[in-house]
Figure 1 (cartoon, rainbow, N blue to C red):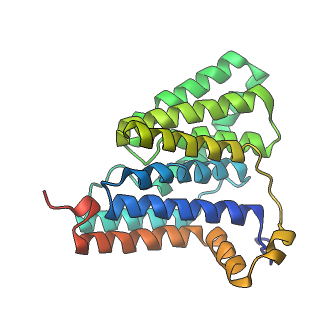
Figure 2 (figure 1 turned 30 degrees about the vertical axis):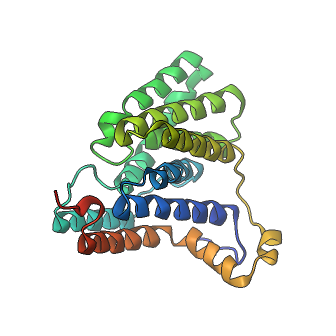
Length: 255
C-alpha cells in the first residue's frame, strides 16, 4: 500500500509544479503561437525535469494508467489527423523505467571512465533516431541516469560529465528539431543549464516552513500540480488539441 502523502508541500511538489507550469508555456507556444519561438525556448527546460525524476524515484514498475494515458493520446492524434509518431513522452517514460536499471549498472560498473564515456556518448548519439519513435528518445535515459546519480549521492566528475552530456546532447537535439535562431537557442540553453544545475542539488523532503508562509490556495495549487501530474498532462493536451483544431492554429494550420 502506498504511503499517505504529506499534508504540506514537498520538494517534489515544488519541482513538479514548476515543471508543469513550464510545460504549459511550451504547449501554448506549440498549439497556439508556433511562430513565437520564445515560448518553445523557455519550455525546453520542462522535459529534463520530468526525465530526471524517473531516475530519482526508486520504483521501476510501469503502471497501467501510464500506458492507457499514452494510448489515449495516440488515439486523439489519430482522430485529429496528426502523425502517430513519435509516440507521446509517456511511452518514453515507460521504456526508460524498464531500461534504466541495466543502463545504470553498465554505466557504474568498475567505475571505468572509458565505459562511462561510451555509455554517455551512445545515449547522446541515439537521441535523434530514437526520438523519431518516441518523444525525446534516449535523452530520457540520459537525464534519468542523472536523477539516479543525484539520488544515490554520486557527485564530482561522474555527475558533472553526465549533466554535461545531457546538456550538450539536448541542446544539439533542440537545434536540429526546432532550428532556433541564435537568441532563442541561447535562451533555451541557459534555461536547460539552469534547470540541470538546480537538479544536481535536488534533495527530497517536506517543506513545512515554506508551506506555512504561503497562502493556502497557493499551497493547494502547488500540491495539486505536484501530485496530479499525469492527469494534468493528459487533460491539458486534449483541451489544447481540441482548441487548436477549432481555431486552426499550431499543427492544424491550413496549408
